[in-house]
Length: 297
Image 1 (cartoon, helix red, strand yellow):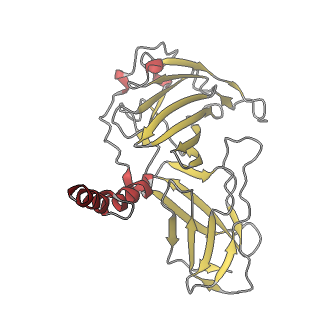
Image 2: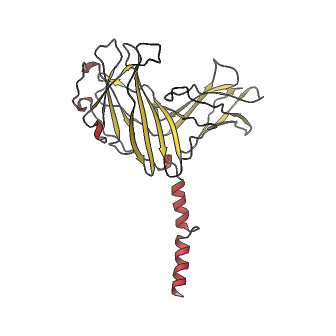
Image 3: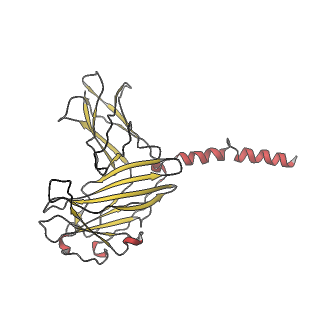
């Protein structure tokens, strides 16, 4: 009798319909956006970068990427060139968290033969792994440097997020990320995870009834789902469905973001407020955008 009563009590507490099971299911269903807290990275001066051999330290350019939740999950990048009239063609990588990069790893860039400009430098691909709770993340990165006499650099990132049930892939691109030592003696740290933002405007150069979109992860990272169809929907605010996304596929180079133009399928004419929903997959909270701006249809 006592055994039966004990079994009944345990089934109430831990059974499939118990509060314990429901709370466990809710935790599992929570997305990375809801669970993740990024620790603040303490400032690092460029003078504290490992003692690597710059050809001209005055011309060096610096940036840093926080790739995981811990304050030490940071990849520091230092770009080197011999002359100010030439693009950066040497890259040093440093990370206190990754043994391979703890002393400053050197990568040599070369002209990207797929580009028409001789001044487009591409560095070898490299990979970084981390975890956000139960979600494992792999970043596959390519770094580029642009045009003679320019400080412009860019990092392309293919981010792959996995847990036991799901896999999500996102392409990232840094925006105006690096700066020279003369601009600041402290690394600017760019988180590779943050609040997703969505901006939309009328496509004035293209055909009528189309809009141009920009999706960002924080202020310095542009993002796009990797070969994920039907991740976008657009509605007029009054609830009438007017559009579906037109296969925003990548080009032959997987490390690129397409021009995000969406043609609107509607017979409506005039100016309307639009509501947009972007779904990056089951590991992320969908982004819903509803602006005050009127769009011409």
